Image 1 (cartoon, each protein chain N blue to C red):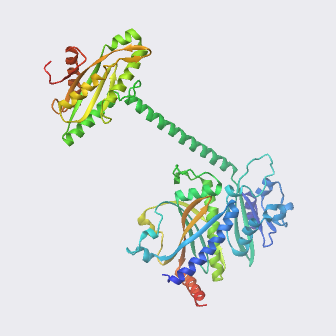
Image 2 (cartoon, helix red, strand yellow):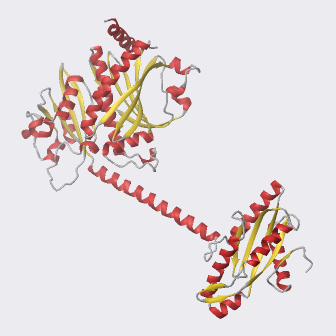
Image 3 (cartoon, chains in turn orange, blue):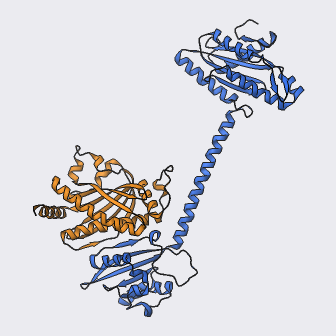
Length: 209
Length: 319
C-alpha cells in the first residue's frame, strides 16, 4: 500500500503529532508522558482477508477497550484508540496515581465507569491531536464527534469484520510511557478511498519537493 | 417553538453554557443558576474567564479555542479535573464534575457548547463499590487460606503433623497404582508401641505425647524421604515402603526401626524405655487391595506381639 519512502514520511509525521498529544497529556496528569509510534501500516480489507497476510500485525483479540470518534467533512473517517483491557487499566491507574500491583492481574472486570471516563478523555486528547494535525497537513477544516468508549470481546475471526469493504485503515502501533509503566495500544484511523488517496498524494508532494 | 426550547433548556438536569468566539457567555441555563447561585444577569454577556478564573488557564483556553476555531469536541473527566463550576452550597465536599465542550456553527458564526454534569453521587457509589470489591477480594483470600488449613487438618495428625488414616489410605492407593504400572513391589507396615499405656499411666499424658513425637523423629531417620509414615491414632503407626526388591528389604528396614528404640528416651527428665511390634504385608504377594493389605499388616503385627513383642512378622509367617 505504501512505498518505504511514503511510510517513512508518514511515520515521522505521526510521531510529531503524538508528541504534541503527549505534551497535552503530561500537562493534564502532571507527569511526564511519552508517546511513540515506531510502526505505521496502511491496510485494507482485501489484504486482511488474504490468508498470507499475517494477523499478528493486526493484533488485539480478546477483551479490548475501544474508543472511537468520527470526523469529517472532506477528509472523512473514524479514529480508534484500542487497548487490551488489562493495558487500559494500567494506563488509567498510571494517570490517576493509583498503584499498579504487578501481582494482581488487572482484568476487564475491574473497570468502573470513572475509569472509562478517564480513558475517554485520554483518547479524546490523543485522537484530536492526530486527526487535527492530519487536517492541518491537508489544509482542510474538520469537525469531530466525542469519543464513544466500548468494552468489546473480539475473537480472532471477528477481527476482520471490524473492517468494512473499501475502507482503508491506517494502523499506528503506539507505546505510552508514564510513571515507569509501558503501555501498548493501537491507533486505527479508518479512511475512505478518497481520503487515503488525498493523504498519499499530499505525502508524494512532500517527497517531490 | 423558541420559547419551548428555552423552557426545556431551563429544565435539563445539567449545566449548559454557550459562549461565542470571544468566550462571551450567551446562554447560562437554570441548572447553573440553581447550582452556582450565579444568575443570568451576573453571567450573560461576561467573559467566561471573568466568571471563573480557572477558565483563563492555558489548558482550559486550549479546549475552548480548539472547539471554536478547529471544531474539536472535548470530554473532560472528573477523575482528572475534579471541578469546573463551584456549587453555591459551600458545605458540599469533594464535588466531582464531568465537562463536555463541543463546537456549534450557526450562520457562519462559531460557538462552543459547554455541558457540565455533577457526578459526585456517582463517585461516591463508585468508591463504595471499589471498597466492596476490595473487601470481597480480601475475604476470598481469607477463605482460601482457611480452606487450605482445614484441608491440611483433615488429612494430618495434629500432634505429630504426620498424615492421618485418611491421607494414608489415599497414599497407599496411589502407591499401588504406581507399583502396578511399573511392575514394582511395596511393603505395608503396621507398628504398635509396646508398653505405651504404662508410660501414660506412670508419667502422664504430656510425657506420652512427647514420646510419640520423639518416636516419629527416630522413625523418620530410618526411612527414605519418599516413604510414607502415618499415625493412625494412639500409638499406632503405618508405613509404606516403595520400590522394594523383596521381603528382605522390608525386613532390613523393620530391624533398623526396632533398633532405633534401643536407646532410652529422655523426656521431661524421665528416662523412658519402650519397644515396638511390627507387622508387614507385601504388594502384590499378599494382596493387591488397599484395605486387605492394611488388615494383613495389622494381623501380622499381632503375630509379632504374640511372639513376645519387640519384633516383626510378615503376614505369610506361620506364627
